[in-house]
Length: 117
View 1 (cartoon, rainbow, N blue to C red):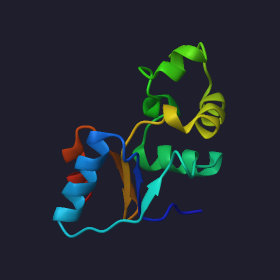
View 2: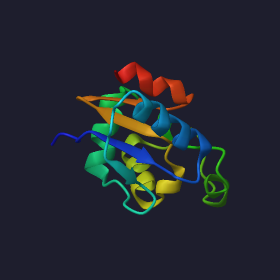
View 3: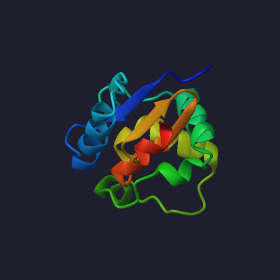
């Protein structure tokens, strides 16, 4: 399976909006996926982490209130468990993430997305 070019976006996040605008200003029009409305499946999350070259724990927002509500700990959770957690609770996924031409990058800071061009 190959993740298609896309911009994983949370429109309520200023960094996500800024990164999307940076790409659009460069003429890159990626399909926008509001991942909170259309969560990624486990297989997609696995591929995304492979493209990012990071373990799933690296795309978890540990500062989210939900992280604390679920009583999660940064350590002691397997990759498979993280994929389960992220598939069930997309709010915990770092944002934004741009996938373009077989590569991916986390848009924090937003300028990181320009590295895909």
